Image (cartoon, rainbow, N blue to C red):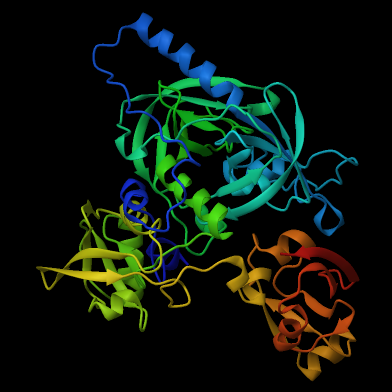
Length: 498
């Protein structure tokens, strides 16, 4: 549904991490993540000096970039060999022909990507899609040493993941301030593409604030404001580093624009400010603290979206700059502040809102309880109000994994079966999975998707969502799920409840 994907129902996305880190009393210890020194001035650099800078930057970055191997056997078959894992983001070079899924050889990875060491004690940042569905994650350093990594947490909305290996004194990269990155600036992409270890490519920043409608495939509240670069990026680069000529991290490489699955000229990276905020939240709270305005919007600069909205609503909105509010959630921060349907949001704090990407980068790295200044147009007249951001549940307090409900932890909801369904499927009991998050614990660990019928949890028959909540509420440890799969077979799988 394009309006929900682009408008961010209940609303929003990312903003000024420098301001956030400076002013937030609950921020992570600044000694944990190391901030880069001020970017060098690029004016007047000659070719020899620039070449020297590339060499220095490469020597800094290459030892801190790792290979990540994803091992997964969900559902008795591969969740996708490396080809399938990256086709999802990069396109299928075989056109529309569906490739047969193959069972990977035992102890062989089902996907590979890159990661960046961001602290000497073994914290590693990568992409969510690199680690998705893994039952085991292997990290291989530039010196060929291998470790089994712990997945600390993920954020599908930004495609960021945080891993940890048990080691000390590791080389790592500093975070640069991605707000200072300029179009035309030289950058290097460092990763492990196509199975080639420690590859460095050079290019420039082609654009900032790109929204390419990629993350809506894995999140209902995507945050897209990518740095676009023409530095060569291919499969296996995902999760690798985009660095400036100081060797500091300006982005995490995530995707390429391609019809073949291979490099065709453009790559996209998550800005370092956004990536840094996400991993700090994961480390401190176990999950990302994200504030929402509480509005659904359409992008007035997006002609296709605008035309679809006008046709559906029989409106006559004209193209322009800003986000047109189509709906305000009841008791949301925007509702409390007096924002109404028909308003056009033009500025958040000191950031001009010209499109979805700008809104995405102006709210989503804020936390519940943060206050933002919102400027909007109503009947052509400008107004400014202060909005207190809330989380998806309408709260303004920080939450940890211990505060999550059972359904939030599982990433799914459940519906009771009717008597007719029980007769049809030959069951005495069961619940149907619904609203299944493909990146959630249930889907990634068991292969269960919407429509599958769960009959038992930890050996106890279930007939309702309340039954599942009763069994798993405050439960920690191994969970056994018995369910009817899409082939009509009763299958049992397990996972660990955090």
